[in-house]
Amino acid sequence: MRATLDQRLSTLRIASLRIVQICLAAGVAWLIATKVVGHYQPFFAPISVVLVLGLAIERRGRRAYEVAIGVALGIAVADLIVLALGTGTWQLMLVIGLAMSAAVLSGGGVMLVNQAAVSGVLVASLPAPDLIDSTHRFVDALIGGGVALTANAITPIEPVRLVRRHLQPLLSRLSGTLVDIADALERDNHEEIVAALERARSLDPAVREMKIAVEASQETISLAPTRRRFRGRVDRLAAAAEPIDLMIRNTRVLARACQRAIDTNENIPPVVTDSIRDLATSVRSLDSHLGGAPVRSAARESALRAAAKATAALEETSNLAVSVIVGQIRSTATDLLLGSGMSHEEAAEQVRSARERLGI
Image (cartoon, rainbow, N blue to C red; front, side, top):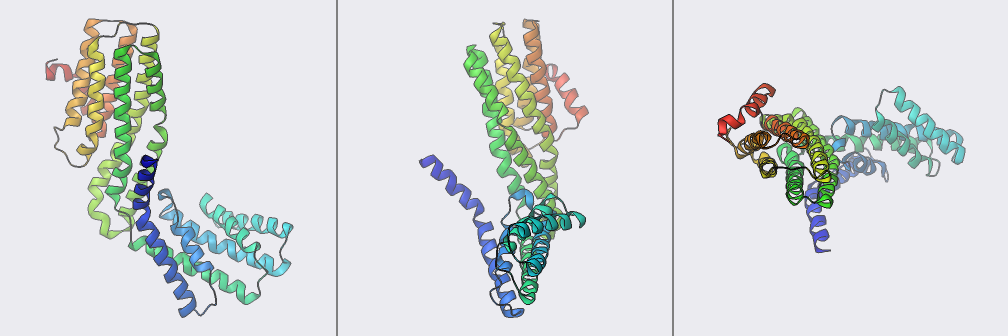
């Protein structure tokens, strides 16, 4: 329970700035609608703020615009239908159909279409308005959407911190998975290698979150002039995203190869498990490298050491299981070097010559 509470408090700290931003923007939208425009109880203004700003990280930028437009469009369609036909089951169905159709015809994406339908349902569930109230609702939605988009533009996320907040735990989990694979192989334990394989498979959602964070950070750089000084660091993190994804896929294949070796009772030289531990060390150091470590960093050195030891294992045995495992270790080491910023040609050459360079 204590661990769960700590995790939730950490999540709240991360979300606190966003919560404050939503509260302030909702208040500003309400003040503009009441004091400047003169509307009475313009609840659609703060509602629009919450709908636009109360979004997950992947729904910023262009999709935030879609939400703002979708809210206003859905309210407008629903008000016209309810004003003419009243409220009821079939009117609700008609509102949803027409709001979604109008959103599609406007060229909007899935977010705009869905938000238009949701806003239409909200309005169609309320008492039928008169013409003035209908106009006010639409204007209030535009005010709230405009305030929300302005708030999103002037208080953008810190792009490097955003990516690393997702990258660090992902690399930590991947490093731990590689250690689990090495331990299972060393102990010749079927249950442990199966658990390690499942752990490797469970990393996919974290990979998606990392890529979403990269996309949001790049979007922030392009939209917020105050954040453009981070462009180089964000580009470096973005370039590492795909190799890290490939690295995780290769780790799954490595775990399956080790499981076959354990199940068939193959002779696996100890140097193979050593090389997998070197991969784990390299993964653990990659975040520091991407944060600005020297060219000859621990991440690169450990990856090359893993490749060199894996190649050396082929001299001790030539069985098929070892050959497959060595191939995956070398592939993962190449992905690590690519993630650290090397070109594909340089990474491949470094892995090929790793044993000779390191004298292993």
